[in-house]
Image (cartoon, rainbow, N blue to C red; front, side):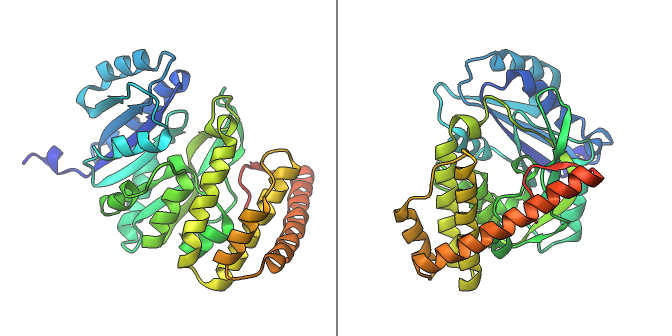
Length: 325
């Protein structure tokens, strides 16, 4: 066996749909990883094209000519949705580590090296995420993805804090692949992260090693915002029975608070009584008590959001896309 064949392999799974203008930047950032260029790491890249109607096919053909057998393309004849798309390419992964990357995002050169070093130093963690720089479609920096410091993110924290982990930063050991592939679609990234956190705490590196494009007109959040909210709710509901009751109540109140805030800002559907009743039952509390907890949580969020805005106006500092106060 040659030395090259013994190198650790990272399978990078890229899901894309009508992202032709961003895809080349995305794929280039994988092969430009410093650990790949210095010969200490091999990558295989599997791209799932979910029946794109733009020039994605032509872009991928050009990239395959450049990168050869290291780039595998899976084309779907009909649109199957992001969850099925990811599952189709994850099933072909052969790496020691699996990374996820959305087709409109891209990586900093040290991303894989830093994450694999982290997992080598933390054998109890099976997955690790990093912070991200938030950029617009012109790649102008707008802020940072979250203000959480480096820490271990267990299931209690992830249910209580909501989804602050960037999907395109996710890397996990092959041992956890069966958990992700065992999810029943449709699902969103929060469902993946909660499933991984049930296995073991997820490492979080506060260094921004991913570039996340925000506010794109073709984003899932803009096109299918209602469905995304439904899938978020289902992922949270599925996780609540596995955590401590007091944490479940706090997580439920936090969810209600954010849904109310989003609805007031015109960014989501109002919380219906049936959902509130179901959530209270899962969290082992009454609907009235849950509503009271949520009102308190809204007050806290509003106070801290105003404080953060004031500090940013007076002292400067980046805009935080998903703040966790």
